[in-house]
Image (cartoon, rainbow, N blue to C red; front, side, top):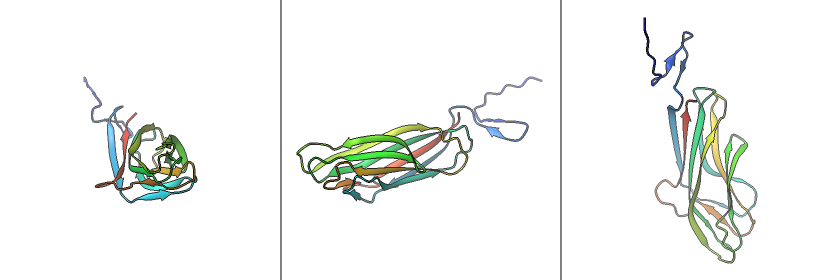
Length: 161
C-alpha cells in the first residue's frame, strides 16, 4: 500500500494527536482599544491594549502585530516609551524616546508599532499587552489621543512550527 502525505491539513498520528504542518496559521485573534490613556510619570502603565491566546501546541510560534495610534505629548523635552509584555515579562522595549522634539511643546507623531515573533512554549492562555511611560516625567504623554474608529490594535497569530 502506498500513501502520500503532504501535511497541508496536518497529520494525525496513531495516538490521535494532530500536528499541523510548519508555517500553517492555526488561529488569529484581534483586539482594538480606543480609549485615551495619559501619563505624567516615568512608571510603566498599561495602555489598555491587551489580548489573550491559547496556543494549540507547545511548539507553536506566536506572531504579535501591534499598531499604536494617536500618540502625542503636551510639554517640551518629554517623550514616550512603549514596551510589549507576555504576562508580566517584558519581551520587547520597542520605543524609548517617541515624540522627542526638544523645545516643541505640543507634538503628535501619529503612531508606532512592532511585529514580534514569540515562542511562549505553552498551551496555556497567554496574554500580551502594551505599556507606556512618560520618559522624562514632565508634562503629559497621550496614547489614543484623538484617534478615529477603533484606535490602537493588537493581533496575535499562532503559527505551527
